[in-house]
Each structure stands twice: as structure tokens, then as C-alpha cells.
Image 1 (cartoon, helix red, strand yellow):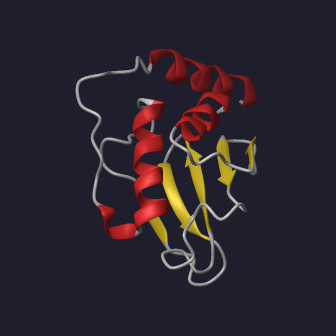
Image 2 (tube, rainbow, N blue to C red):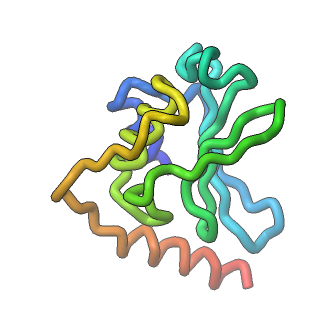
Length: 126
């Protein structure tokens, strides 16, 4: 998740806080928050955070208010190129929900190491 925070920072949307947690001991979650004006209030009046878990993948979740959940584009799969996640998040934070998917194209990040790390974590908590 440190690499995700770095990718977000590289796209100009540095999270002010982020962490991982296992609320039920069976699922790994990550949370990225901004309190520095990055999510535009006209698009996210209640604020928003980026969440990830190994089952649901990447989601922008509206803080407070109606708690809307917005999945990122189909290119931002549960395990995908971190630059893709950052590009999608930036588009939605800056331009709002209707910005549409952002596809980086042919560059592909090898997701096997990330998947293996989560699988090791799952085995260690069993």
C-alpha cells in the first residue's frame, strides 16, 4: 500500500493519511484519506476516501452523507497496475463521478507478487 500512496502522490493527489487494517481478522483492508482539499467539494461535498480489500477491490466511498460507493473503472481491478488506480482516482477526485474510465494502455504491472502476498497473509490468519 506504500506503493499505492506513492503512485497517488505521483499523480498529484497525495493522501494525508493511509493505513491497512483487518477489522474482522479475515479480510485485509486499506484506507486512503485526503483532508487537504484534493477531493473537490463541488463533487464530494461530504468528503471521500479510497478503500481497497482483497474481495471487493478499489472503491471511492463518500464520507458521511449517503455513503455512496463508486467502483473505479474496470481497468482498476483488485490487483492491477498502481498507476491505473492513481489515474482513475485522480480523475474522479478532481472531475467528479462522471469523468469516465481512464486507461493507461499497454503498460502492465505484474500483479503476481501482490496476489501472493495477500494469499500468504490469508494463510497466516487462518
